[in-house]
Image (cartoon, rainbow, N blue to C red):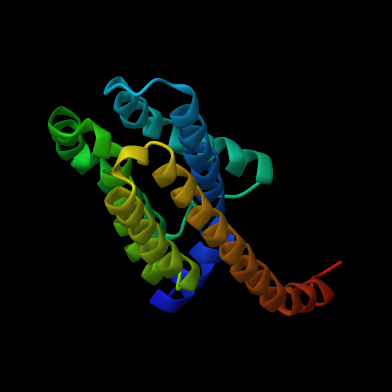
Length: 195
């Protein structure tokens, strides 16, 4: 299997990681709602730091409900996708330092980190949606952090959730196009299958 075939297979079987993006929409929306409800204390930043740990379990749950094979078993690039997804773990010391130094900017830092994390997925899935997600999420987080620093626990999560929603819609469109392109091959294979 050549690289192009592996990338296409991974994108098709994992639906380009759409369940994880949908989980991100929900998680960042919840962060925004909590920003409206919780008092203005540095401990709110801890909710972000610990709450981001819910992203993978939520993504796996959505993948199971949607019957999506996020791990694309048997595809050699699936392991690379796992490594790319897990890279954010290396930034835990940076986020702890951010919390200790400037807890009010933790949403901003996490948003920019999330956006940067999407960039390699644009190549892996050959997806413009991830490019939009990378630039849009980083830009939205940075702009809300700079323009509304006192509202970063509300403005940043809702802005990031909005960009993630647009990214999810674009991924859904790309995935639908993949399935439409694969359908003639599946039908042709079914017609020629032994009975």
